[in-house]
Length: 251
Image (cartoon, rainbow, N blue to C red; front, side, top):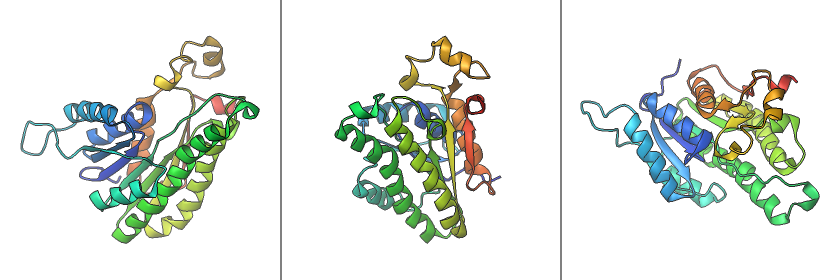
């Protein structure tokens, strides 16, 4: 297995939820994590939690100071270019930034459509392009993980734009697994189902939803992070689409 010790891992949407859990897990594996997001205060709080729970710096009892956060807008090429300047050797990129709005398509504003598509899909495309180019120049093994959604496959009433953005990530993943794989860069995707995070607090006690899941519960962000760690470390994992939905995709 490919070790994450000493590797630089950049995670978008890292201030909370799945993105935070992935960053925390990578830090526990010995990686140097770069937390990316738009809310500096939330990123700072997330960084504090990670540095206080991750392994100490070699030869000391102090938290590892190599973990950092950067205020970052995935929608702008300039943010990605700035990241490559401050961190020229990123070994793992996790595209986890995402927003949603539950609304019937005919009632969804053009601005909301644009916001969802640019954040969830275009932001990941830009990251894969700009960080991917940097990874190719490194000429060393690297990995990209795109966090999609079960909705990319099943869709759902009121989630058409979000589902479209997450389905786009699957096409991006498959294309780049071939395109970048030839350079030793593996590209994979995770498709979470119902995961217990701040975004789903209002759903976690909905027994009707729970009854639809064969395992009869929501997943946890830590379980998604486990899948991300596996994909990051397995040197032959390329173009993997990991459904993490408690069996919901089988129903």
